[in-house]
Length: 184
Image 1 (tube, rainbow, N blue to C red):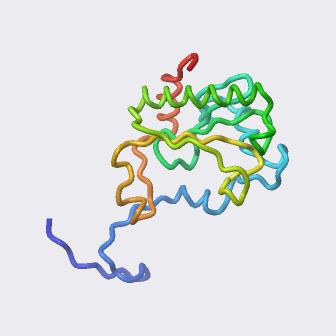
Image 2: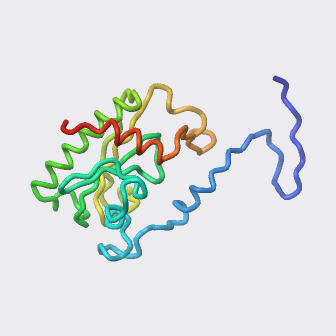
Image 3: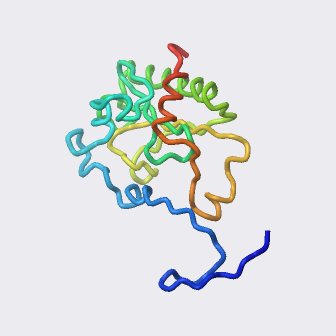
C-alpha cells in the first residue's frame, strides 16, 4: 500500500496522515450526561433506575435478590459489566452480609459467563470507591468485571485514545445472559 499525501481540508486542522475513528457516543460520558445530580438515591442515580427497566432496556445480564449484573454503558472492553447492589450504598464496608455474599457470588458467575461466552483469558476486577479513587458514580457502589485477552491492548487506545468494540451492547447482553450460570 502506498502512502498518500495529506489532503488539505479547510477547517479540519493541519493534515497529519491520521485516519480518524469518530466515537461521538462517548461525548455523553465526557460531558457527564446521565450522571447523578446529587448523592442520594432520588438524585438520578442510574444504578437505582436501571433495575426498574426491562433486562433488555437496562442492559441487565442477571438479577439476584440483593444485587444485579449490568453491562457498562461506557466499556473498557467488550463484555465489561458491573455488579451493583440494589440498595443505594457508597462504601463496601456498608454492605450487609447478604449483599456482600451475593456480590461475591455474582462476580464469580460473571467470570464464568464471560469465559464461556467470549473465551476471556483474564480479568480486571475491582471497585473505585470515592471520587478521588476514580469512581464515575461514587454514591452507588459497583464492582467492575472487565474481560481481557492477549493482545487486547493495541495501538488504538494507546495512540488513538479510542477503544474498538466489535459488538453492540444489546448483543453482548444477550450473549452473557444466555451464558450466566445458575450458581458459581
